[in-house]
Image 1: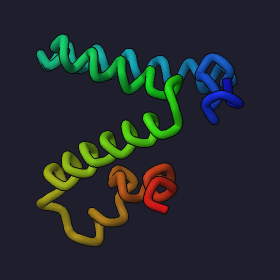
Image 2 (image 1 turned 135 degrees about the horizontal axis):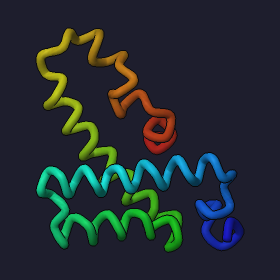
Image 3 (image 1 turned 45 degrees about the horizontal axis):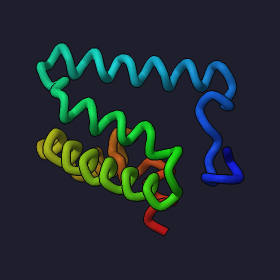
Length: 105
């Protein structure tokens, strides 16, 4: 699969990594349901994002960029009352995540 897509499928990852990612995904779905946001459209979009890794590197990159745009907007809204330095250095700020930095280059 890596030769076809440039990515390793999650099933090929070490068990602890795959289990952690699966648990995070299930927790996200449960959270969406508890908040009343598990609409058909939202779940289809989540499925598309999860499946994007199997399509092409370009598709996966576009989904990542879209996700980072949403994460940054959400972070900016929720941290608007923080001190500037605290906001910029926060590990919750998507701009500080390694994958986001790689995407920008």
